[in-house]
Structures are given as structure tokens and as C-alpha cells.
Picture 1 (cartoon, helix red, strand yellow):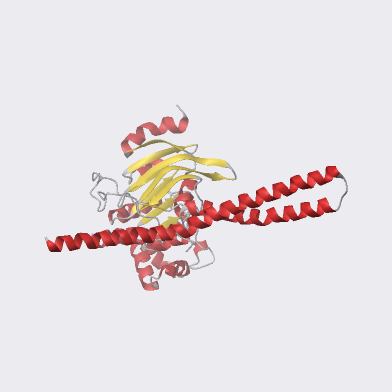
Picture 2 (cartoon, one colour):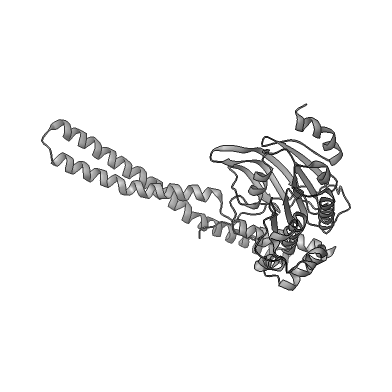
Length: 118
Length: 258
């Protein structure tokens, strides 16, 4: 019977030690990729708009190209914001975890020191 | 780092021991489903399934064809990902975990239709289970101790065994992995009642050793004979859960829609 309990406990321990992806990281990675893509697509649109405008003397087409350029800039800004937001979350996550661990360790040391004094 | 370890969930309050089996009173169930939805190609097959299996407990999941029982097992084993809801193994959310990782740690699914390799011998089928690091001697000891009939047929190709013997082999392969959580899909399908009784007697023995067991069955009575509790599943939803005696009273009207 002890062996059976050990097996269950071993199972619990192994499952607890499994490395599992947090579902939130999947969303974060997707948005990071979307941001990177928009960051590239935006300037391309803007450059395309420039050449479109440069290649015509029709003022209506030039206005369209200007609108396209503004859209390209907007796309680039949105992409940059998404990329910055989710890459910061990715890097800051580990920094925050480490900070939390170090603060907890420091508190434990303080408590231990106080207990030793008393 | 691309993975993040999730902390284990807090254990539930201690459960009253409903049976004399070891481990039945442990605080957190070894398997828990909470509001699980899953399906295929946009069609929702499971609609908010919630279920618990504790260590040393046998839970029977009953229901007619097409209820979603096998889909439930696929979600538990990690072969199908839940669209919403939580699958917790030993208190840890394991949605999206690789099935091989769960299997290596002690979650074993014995599939519907036995899943033996028909062109391999009994011994060769058992040899497939050495992936977990157990020796052939250990595996054969477990298999032949539980099912002496397999020892007599170790050199026989699995495809030439009777249905009951194939099911014994499938169950023996599962038990050879030393599971902590055993999931059995339609153990009795296509088998004679005497063989089914023998198989479920082995299931009861295994549960008495502390293994958590979830059994899916269309044919309720034999599963209810060994179960600590049971659940009825209809059209992707669990309509009743409770002790076997209670389930027996509602089973006819649930299946027949009375």
C-alpha cells in the first residue's frame, strides 16, 4: 500500500514539474509577430505610395497615393506599438519574476536575522 | 525561454473516503475536468464537461453512441485540445500538454478497439511499452501475472488472438507502464460477458492498488459493478453524476428519453 501511495505522489511530483506553456504566451507571441509584420508592411506601403505619386501627374491619383502613404505610416506605428508592448511583456516577465524572487529571499533573510536577535 | 511553468493549483479540501481503497481520501483529484468544451472542425462535441477522478477511484462515464465519451478521453490524454475549460491532472492545468509527456509520467489511455499491433506477437506488443524505461522482464512480469493466458500465447501474433485476449493484451500493455491514471475506452465492446467480467475484475484489482481509473462504457451494468461513482453523458453534456445505485435508477429514462 505504501508503494501505491508513493506512485501517486511520484505522479503528482512529476506532473507538477512539467514545463507547460502558459496560454497567455501564445497570444502574446501571435501579437508580437503581427506587430513585426505591420512594422515592415507600413513602410513598404508608404514607399509604394511615394512611387505611385511620383509616377503620375493626375492630382486625384496623387491624393490617393497620399492617403495610402498616411495609411502606411499608421500601420507602421500600430505595428511598432504592438511589437514594443509584447516584446517588453516577454522580457519584463522574467525580470519581474526574478525581482519577486529576490525580494522574497531578502524578506526571508530579514525575518531570519530578526529571529536570531530575539 | 519559451515555456512558463504554471504553479500547481491549491488542493481541494480533504475528500471523505467513500471506499476502503488506498488513496481514495487524498485531497486533490488526480483528474479533473472543469467546464470543458471541445470539438472537431468548429462542431462542439463536448459542452461544458466537469468531472473528477480521485486516486484509487473508479469513475464510469456512461452514455449512448455519439455522446462524446471518446472525445472526452482524447481531451484528457492530450490528443485533442479543449477549446475552453480546464483539464487538470494532479491539480495542474495541462491543456495543450504533449500527450507523450503525460503518458511518460503515468497517464495511460487504453483505446477503443484495443489498438494492438496485429502483425506482432504478444511479446512484441508488450515490448512496445519499454519506451518508458521499464525492462522487458518487468513488463512481462506485470502482464503475465495479471493475465496468465497471455503467457501461454506470448509467441502468437496478436491478430490471431480472440477478442478477449486482444483486450487483455491491450490492458496488459497499459498496466505495464505503471500508470497512476488509467483511462479505459469501451473495454467490453464485442466481448462475451464472461470475458468482460474477468477484465473488470482486473480493473477492480488495479483500482485497489491506488490507480485512478476512468472507464468509458456503453454497457452500463458491468462498469457500475466496479465503479465508485458514475456519470451519464448525453449529447456532449453530463446529465447525471453520482453513486452507481443512483445512476442505475435514472439510466433507463436517460437513454430512452423517458
